[in-house]
Amino acid sequence: MAAPRLRLGVNVDHIATVRNARGGALPDPARGALLAVEAGADGITAHLREDRRHIRDEDIRRLMALITKPLNFEMAVTEEMVGIALATKPHAACLVPEKRSERTTEGGLDVIGGHDRVRDATQRLKAAGIRVSLFIEPSIPALEAARSIGAPVVELHTGSWCEAVTQGSYEAPREFERIQLAAARAAELGLECHAGHGLDYETARIIAALPQVVELNIGHFLMGEALFVGLPEAIRQMREAMDEGRAGA
Image (cartoon, rainbow, N blue to C red; front, side):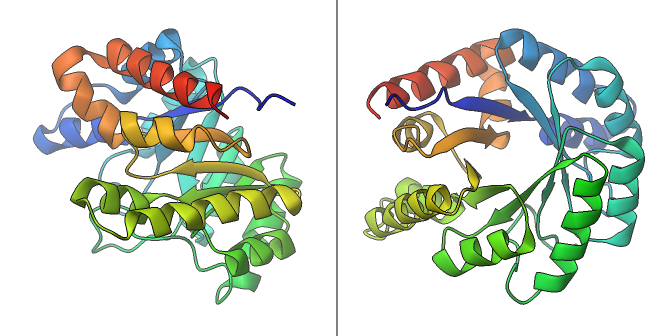
């Protein structure tokens, strides 16, 4: 049976990063989201951090009002963020770890040590009709915990693999094997499997060949490429890389 079409979620956080570096209203993350959808994105991702370092509350409201594709609301497992999600009701909420000191998300959510807290948030969001995903390490114990929590979707953290590939590290094959095994186990557990963090054209092409992975979420790389080729062209090239990889699945 042919692998399902691989979806592309475009993260617009770093349009807001550029805006916030100077203040004011430009560049506008909502405009970037509209361009991304027009260029072929299947959904938009935005992470409302507790310190509002990039995306702001008003950005979430505007994205909900303006885009015609699903919004994936990345959020920490805090009472504040659960409340915002319940009030906003995005299509999906991806629960991620968050530390004030980090520049970007570092590693997957602790779904083992924080099992009950994550389960409580997951159940509250699901009861409101929000599709919940957990951003986790590509490990079997994390997958087992995600299933126990009751989340229908997991997003595998690909950052360690992508970093190893970029550095030419001998660890790259081992890191990719972890992702392969995790994706296969996710399917066995009945979990929808997404992947993201650090992906570029080449790593997206490679991971697209894993038939269990049905969605990639990519932001920083696309926004960097957009500085040189424009956002629609960056998305077109990413879609092409993903389709090439999927054809070999």
